[in-house]
Image (cartoon, rainbow, N blue to C red; front, side):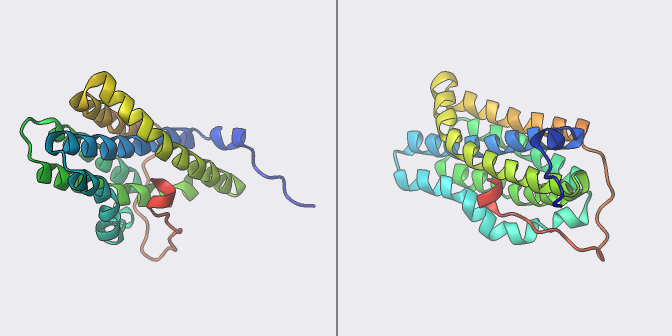
Length: 213
């Protein structure tokens, strides 16, 4: 007989995962809003499609340049702390894009710095998941996360444009910062503090930007 597969209800019955999942969605949404809003802000102020594309592409450049180095922070410090610090750092930096008369190149650099905080957040969450969910629940949760990541990447464009239309560019940036603040709050409230990983233990595989946004 084969062992019964875990259900979605059993996965979401785990309190820590519910908080991690909510924080994950907010962080993904925040990443998309940041890229879309800053790229639109650059284009509206300069009229340069090249600079706007550079702003949006900086999120992927951050993965290529900073990902291999900064992801290791998840093994040097407690994962919960890494995630909270990354969220708070992004929440603090994003409103700077709303400053008046900030030149477009500075906006591109700012977005790049903000996205440098994505790799350690993703690595910390990926390493924490096997400690929160065991057995088949871990595999089911990964499937849920992957589906949600793809949906958020698509919906993020529409939501970003709608927020800009409703609230203005700078208002959308403030909402964007709020997503990271709430994400940090969910992690702080619902995820148990654990010591950092011993160097001798094996590390779980980590997903790249195509999986976690």
